[in-house]
Amino acid sequence: MIRPASWLLRALRWLVAATVVFLAATVLGGLIAGPVGGPRGGAGHPAREVGLLAGAIHNDFVFPLDPDLRRRFQFAEQGGVPVGHPDARWLIVGWGARAFYTTTGTMADIAPGAVWRAVIGDASVLRVEVWRDVDLAGLPTYRRLALTEAQYQALIAGIEAEFARDRATGSPVLVQAPGFYEGDAFFAGRTRFHLFNTCNVWVGRQLRAAGIRFGIWTPATWSVNLSQWRFGQEQG
Image 1: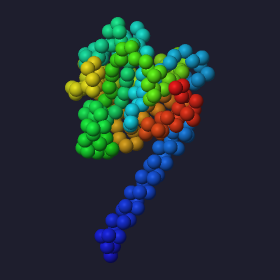
Image 2: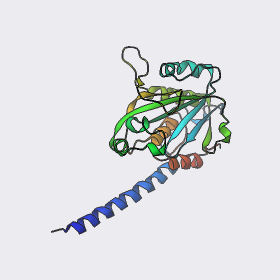
Image 3: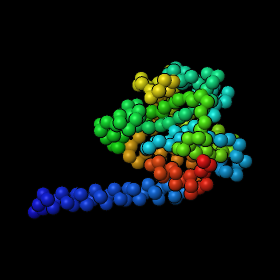
Image 4: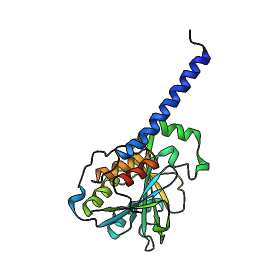
């Protein structure tokens, strides 16, 4: 018969071991190249610059707004995102767990229930925001990526494909949740979020699908940073 204290000790050992393995995988996953799809780097010279903006646990894509991008993301106007404003210069797009992402504006807002849903599985959302004249190069958490035109177009198309669409209109589905700031909005995503498919995993998958060498599994911000360093994508 296993005594309760002995069972608890074994469970604790397993938990510690699983945590160590998981953390090791977040490092190795960022350093081992994953399968690359779409146009490869040799499909042209780098002609486009996009960015990654890192937070404590999350990465957003950053795109310079041009007429084509304003047209393609015009749908965000329904959520109050001023994509067409003449002063708007940068488009910010992020992906995450619905319950967690729509309620966690800062680390102080983290709720245990939202964290648990994110771990075991939750619907996803994308957050769209625009910035005006911001010196991105002066932000310590901003990193530039140099893409060919083909890679850039593949990346935009991959992000567009992540939006769930209204069957009647074909437009992305606005999520009725308050944004973090004035001028951002959430839209329903197509895939599910869970512990092994995080916002940072999504970033890596989008980059690899666009033909950019990146880590095979990047669940944490440090996984993304390691991939940028390992595969020469960091242009800080």
